[in-house]
Image 1 (cartoon, rainbow, N blue to C red):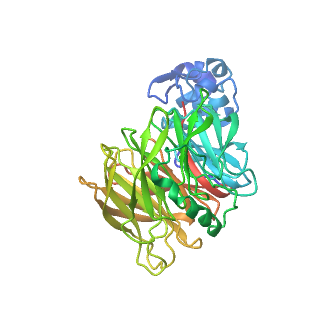
Image 2: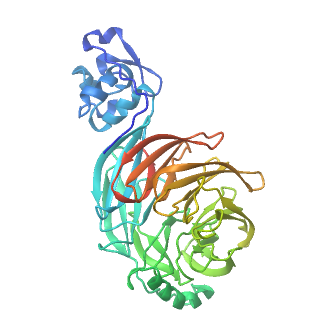
Image 3: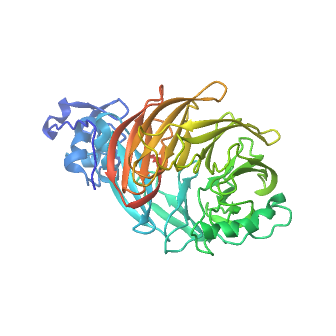
Length: 475
């Protein structure tokens, strides 16, 4: 693997001079090198000493912290938090970054991102090939959808996450995701009419006849339920969550159309919206947050034929909804597209407002294949990725969000690899990580939170066919 580093200054001071030398800790406070400093970043893991010769040395001057025992040996800042010690020079506590892999099948690669450096951590082997994943709000549970490949498919596995080390441990057993939609009486509303079409589409998409292909997972606000849209079977399920956070039983479902790909909940939790790529529509469901029940409220056709809505992004104000279109335009068109909707969460009304072209690389004339969409935490910018034709390097595009929800183009950048399937923003909006599915690379960008612009930071060789990237805070 390769890793690229920003400037990271490691200052080495002899233990004999410790009483006279003070360092600046992660939090900016002074530290005594006799005790290994005062930094809370690297010091807590001092006894382990695994990074003693590098990050430990930094601890004695800049980031040692509370690891007095290791400080006495002149190697504070190592152990479990050794990497944090290495980042102490700038006070960067770092983040964990998780990458879901198809090859080796079903592996979750874990990295630590700190001060522009990507460091590999232990790999977790899962139940089978991976589609996507999501964290809960506390980031101590990771939900992983298994959808493709020869391993177990049609499952969702729950993992607990160690907030310090990043280690993942499976919780309970994987929940089965059935191909055939269970019957829940009237819970599916008027959506059951689409079930026949979904079976045909699974065949046309090359999916095994018994593989529902679960996609992007979404927890409701209270984290009592999780929505699972299924691309192969064209249905959407809502599962209840058990006390340990793992999936329980399906509590509601709808066979609403072809190629369900995502689900988002309204801010007031009264509605759930699901894009059906193959049906070229978005379905709005009434949602009962206490029971997890869904009832079809309306079906809204995309304003342009063959758009293929893939993923949705709902603004924090709850009224602006954006959809990235996977198939819009075809190879001969000037650009792909994304659609802007106004949404009234008091009654569930979803109204198409405007279609925006997504600028492409100069001279590119191939397929568009829109992939991911995400709004910056500030609510000021919208990011989308275009996978293009699986040969050309993919594209990352930034839009500014106006006071009326309208979009204005900021910039288009290469994803620096082929087929950017999914990207993620850090919780502070200052970093963006994207996995390039067909070039087996992870690319890290810094984000200017004032302009929205991206600046390339680092590249890391990862597994073959990375399916998702997800940031999580180290605590």
